[in-house]
Image (cartoon, rainbow, N blue to C red):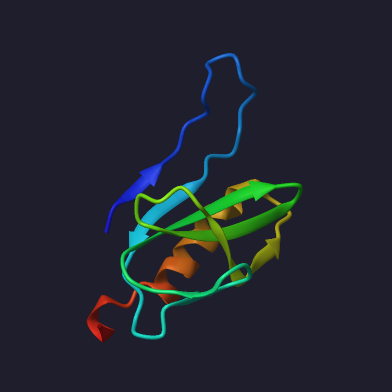
Length: 99
């Protein structure tokens, strides 16, 4: 499972809350998304913060399209809490032993 912290693109950019990204392998039920329903197989999970809310998204590993995980939005008072939200999402969705 790879855990990659994304950095802001330009040095002059204002300090941004980094997104958290982790490769996961969900169980046989896959991950339900708002846009396309269930996705299965090798996936990448990403948690981002914008407009006072954390959003958990998923993509097929190395694909371009991202999908919002159903139920994957939560209001946050502190952007630093993105780490906790991401850790919980990975804990719930990464189930390689259930393959």
